[in-house]
Image 1 (cartoon, helix red, strand yellow):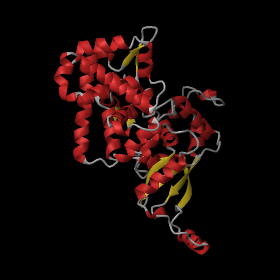
Image 2 (cartoon, one colour):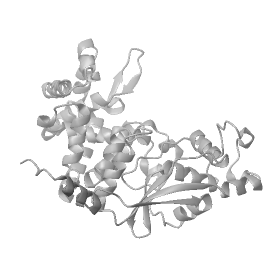
Image 3 (spheres, helix red, strand yellow):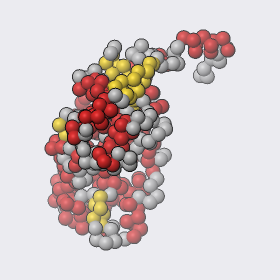
Image 4 (cartoon, one colour):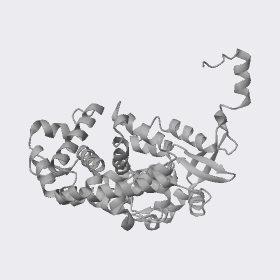
Length: 377
């Protein structure tokens, strides 16, 4: 039914009620204060689950420190007051992380444009005057207050709405980074967990999570991995769950993935456990069939490159035929050889590579590879 049309007076009263406004305040903090807030857990979560991963390299962190040293204005950070006097960082984690890491002597300056004399120096290596100069610099923080309740929704919805608006400009979030923020919950947690599974990391050339993560600290080898740093690894996991439901493969690929995240956001515990087992089982079976060539296509120079479309097709074929797992494993050499032979055909190769990458092409790709598997067993 159409919504009741409001009068001018009612619209004004709605505005005056504050239902569509977020309460906020602005404060300036000295850099040592920022360090104390993060270390003392007053800013309790510098990397809440809906935030993207750290993507600044050392050169970018160094140039930010140089901007602070030169007193060049920098954008404010946005904090969400989850409870009274307890905050989460909604926007600005890259800047805050750079401040903390430099003060803790965790990287040396590089790539500076004006203060090149400081190249190779950590905070402790800088002259006392430089250290005091940084200590006098400030960073602004816009705080969204706990009493905000726009749209009559809960705090979870408030921070999701604000986060989405904050990230419509500036450095664009990758699609999975945005999904990670908008659809945080049990399903998103499962994607992150599975992206860190040792077999998955091995197949996708990702440094194992368990060996490169300690709390919030991420070793450089993992932090700089191209699939990890922009959450592409989580999107690859998501593709399996999104494409295994054939009747939901419609529209753009991005919309298919978005709808899957939205639909299963609040996944119940039992389903989460079952899906974890199913994904790992399909992954291990694919590895048992294809070995070192799992999800890899050979290019014209004989190099074997990882392929997301091939991953889609193999994982879904294994999923659809999983009841015949014993037969799949028994005929694994035949399956691998047959698929390899088909990939020598230019038309088949183009289909697998995914041009065009439409819903119909995805469905055809999945069906064709499933048929190959079926014929082999």
